Length: 244
View 1 (cartoon, rainbow, N blue to C red):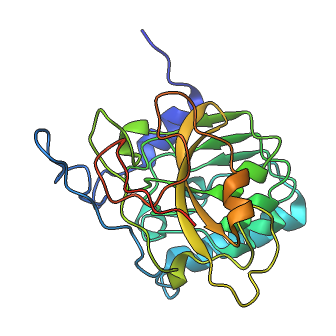
View 2 (spheres, rainbow, N blue to C red):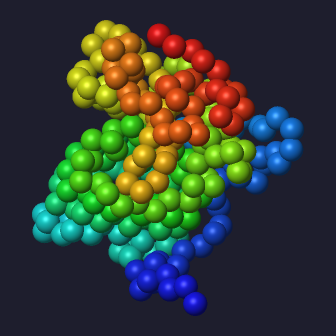
C-alpha cells in the first residue's frame, strides 16, 4: 500500500473539493480544445481568511519558523476564500517549506522570489492553480515540488491550452521585470508564457518582461514543450507566436 505521509494525510482530512474552477471540467477531449480565460479575479480582502493568512505571515516572519502551511492554522471555510497570497510573503526569508495542498489558490504572487530559503513547494491538488510566476525561478534553493500537472496550462493529456496574452493585467502585475528584476520605467510590461523546470516539476510560467533582451535571455523549455517564450492562444503545444 502506498503511504501518503503524515503531513499529506493531515491536510487531506482538512480539505474540500468544493468550488474549484471549472477549467478542467469544460475542456474538450476531442477536436480543438477550448482556450480558457485566465483567473484575474480580485482577492476579497474583507474575507476572514485573508486577514488570517496575513497575520500568519507576520507571525512566521517574526519567529523565523521554517514552515508555511495556512490550512493548518485556520478553518478550511476561511482558507478556501483565499485565491492568492499576500505580497508580504516576501518577508518569509527563513521559510523552507510552503505547504498549500488542496488550496483554492488561483495564482501565487511574484513576491515569492524573495523567499530565498525555499526548498519545497507543495501545491498538489490545488486544481485552480494553472501556472506560476516566472519570479519563482529566483528561488535558487528550490529543489523539491509537488504539483497536479494535469491542472497546468499546456498539458497535452488534459488538453488545457495556454490563454492568449496581450496587455498587462492589474491583478497580476509585478513591480519589476520578471527576468532582470529592474523597474519597467516608461515601457509597458510584455507578457509571455514559458515552460521551465521548477523543483521536480515542469511548469508553465508567466513572464512580465521589460525588453527583448530579457525575453531572449529566458532559457529554452525542456524537450517536448514549446521551445521559446510565446503569447499562447493556440492549441496545446501550438501557441500563437507573437515576439518582440
